Image (cartoon, rainbow over all chains, first blue to last red; front, side, top):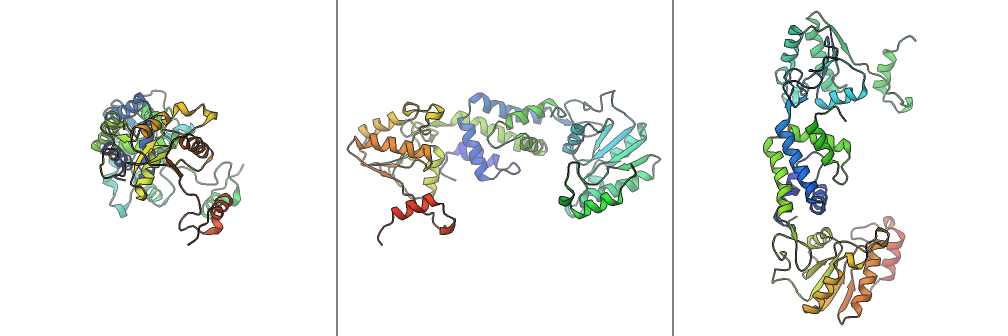
Length: 199
Length: 199
């Protein structure tokens, strides 16, 4: 790697800290940036800095926000009596894209993971219960992932939430839409069969 | 995509201009930068700017350089009577990594490609001949790629170079080292057979 001048090596090193970017990719990206117009490179650099300067977490739901409250929490058109609990901001964005939810969100900023030393106090769980007490919440939809950590977090939350007087729901599991049954894994199929409903 | 605040959308847009980075990857990278320590993000941004500010092409061989001449052209230990002609800087770096060449380079900054409207005047070919006239060059190794454009460029260069009084060579083609014969393509095998040599 020491066949490049120092500025190139520095950029390669910094780019390869990004997830999924190895030395080879970082090298290719650096070469692109080198050939690209100066304005494009400057725009990229300044948007990184702007992101770090402007972005904060919403004071209420811990989603991304450019102000005190995020665009969803400050939107009076959203149904404010229902909260969807997700692990990460990307999950919230995925649900928003689906258009299937019109309520508010609460981003835990992670999942329970005893192996990594992440317990309930490391997530935004206390803040969720503060919201349930102070806002008029009717229902909490637990929309953590369906993997081991997500399910464990969902169980923990469901148990704790049932102590309050609100409806607790979990997103449905089953065969993905447009999916071919023979390609669906057995656990999902079993789940879909158990959760069958009358039409 | 409009579920993210503007700063995030801006970064996603700028990142997805990089080669091999689509919207999904740009989204993932942006989320990483968002979570990463401020110092890491600042280092990345500043190394992009430093690269654009410090990097120039070597005045002699058109490789990357931080000064007037690159580290190879200004190294008195290199054999200065032999020039290896490559398409791009990355090719030069690949040859340097191999350690198989101790002479100087000349980076064409592209290949002949009539389909894309790239002719001899768009490459650093004139500068190569100027070097041959002014420096004491004994041999030129044409190390363009072995694809269609690379071969065409090699033919063009070989023909023009033979008009001068120097040795013109082409890098060897054949079975890659460590390669299993049954996985080598037929064109390469034919080439390797034709170029067989006595041991």
